[in-house]
Length: 282
Image (cartoon, rainbow, N blue to C red; front, side, top):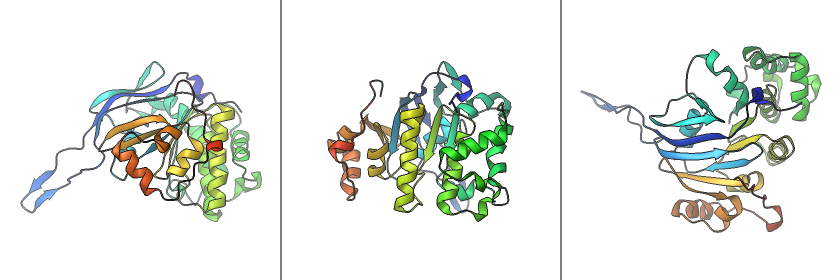
């Protein structure tokens, strides 16, 4: 299976993106709806095909807001998002069909995105139908499942019958079935035990190295960033405060925020031999 991403080429890029939630509402009972986290200030970065970037930072740093904007689920108040030469912004489903095929999302909690009443085959074929992907949809679903090392015999099982690790791999297969160019993965191993974490992280690394997918991995775990991603971007207070080769950011952080994250990660293990080799365009 090739990863055509709808035949889209070029980097996924954010250029000067800012975002602010609406001002708090004031009533006779006080202030309601105040939102301090998630604001973005002039965020720029690019993700090239076949490259991997970890997006790390504390809760409220703006990671989830940036991902929503990259998924065209929220409109920036300033700046642009583009895939190749084509600008991307929220709009009707029909106008974004090309983008939904090119850029797929892997959620943190697959239980919230997989309907337990649907079979695995139905779950994998649904985005193929919605995005009007050509080909035999059952065959494409089977191929995607094989790539995540889930037996094809589970195609007719319901999501509610699967283990947590199987559900997570089905969520990845669902994203892969449409043959995207990019994956945005939000804490994809946070709920898994160590053996399953290793399986999923190995899979993501293989997709980048061997199949040329671009990967943005949102994580709070620096050891995960060290294992999978060639570059790391550190977010704090709605800004990217540091961005560079993962080994450099983690070994010699140049910002107070990155230093604090490294110091707080007592379990970080980053042996010299396992360091990812950054791409020239990273």
